[in-house]
Amino acid sequence: MQYRHLFFDLDHTLWDFDTNSKEALKDIYQHHQLEQRGIDQFNHFFERYSFHNHLLWERYAKGQIKQDELRWKRMYLAMLDFKLADESLARNMGMDFLDILPNKNKLFPYTHEILTYLKEKGYILHLITNGFEQVQQHKLNKSNIGQYFNELITSEVSNSLKPNKEIFDYALNKTGANVQNSMMIGDNLEADIQGGINAGMDTVFVNHILATPHIQPTYTIVHLKELETIL
Image (tube, rainbow, N blue to C red; front, top):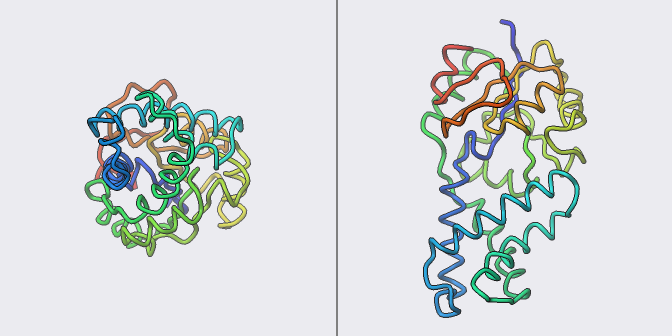
């Protein structure tokens, strides 16, 4: 068996972040009565939130902003697009989001089946994620997939972010793996695929959205079941 240690990304790869975050935001939208505050349609708010969240995560990944700023400012900037400037409300919504989101449990199709298949074949499974430690652990518990993984490596604990080589070095050291017997599996070309390449690992691009790759992975799949043809 060429590979022994398989390092998975979590959000957008196994855990359906888009569906779960939309459900969590809808709960927050209703709880804080944003419709009565001038944001008349949830889908409009979700579109603006998604826009700002993406840009802020890029800044966070580059070390330009801290976690706390990311958490509340994505709410604030989305509300500002509707001429609602309320930092206190944005901070409360940011805290509520982190409370609600990890309780959502939608996974991509075939997640449990593929993880069971890989464990039964003798692979050792881990996670490498840029998410926050407590939040990611809660997601694993609520979606009932934590039992498949030996180690959870987060940017928060490793003090580094994908695609930086340091987080992969940390993961290899913690798990006792090496680049020759390891593979990185994820949906993000920059963070997961380029990160795996930077570390010297083979990679699998989980192309759920049928994107055109601008970075060349070792393998590309469009459905998790296709891992059975590789591993």
